[in-house]
Image 1 (cartoon, rainbow, N blue to C red):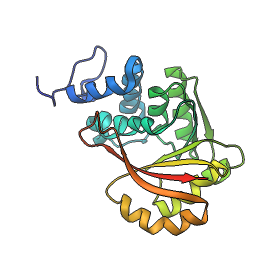
Image 2 (image 1 turned 60 degrees about the horizontal axis):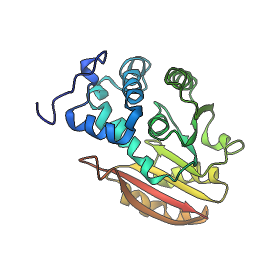
Image 3 (image 1 turned 135 degrees about the vertical axis):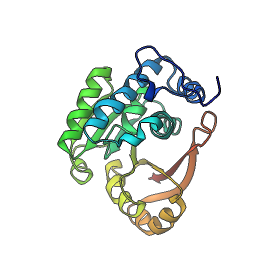
Image 4 (image 1 turned 60 degrees about the vertical axis):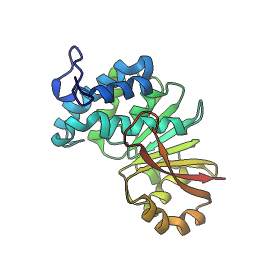
Length: 224
């Protein structure tokens, strides 16, 4: 068996089996909650695809490109912090973080009703008692959300995302935005906006270097 060969897991559809390398990483990231991560991937590969939260072509890449890519961001979050995941969609990174870190308290903010319904179903099925789901736009959630950390993935460019996420911190905390190769360019375009909104620093960091072949790129904004 090679590192790229799927590892058989009883009851798991072959299309969503992790490779040997992905399973090793997942076991390191999720620990004793690895089975919950497996079940989350199954939800993504079935009802998540059926309801249009992800495209069918993403199924073979659910572990590496999506779930692990998000879950490793947990290493950038302190113990017992409160987290708001903006534009949670398919629970990425919100649900992945909730599985990896049961000490965190998360609120998943999502404006679309069908996605909110799916998120609630998944949270209930997985028994995640550290997660709540709120149907709202980020601008609306400011009235009810006050957290230590705000996360986001595939929501918008940093110049706009800063305005959607930073106000949720109420003057103190961190924004962790999962980004790709455009991170440096987006940060350069957003620096003035970030400064105007009270950002004391903005930097590009990586997460998951110890377990992932391709670490996750994160834009970290510190407020206060």
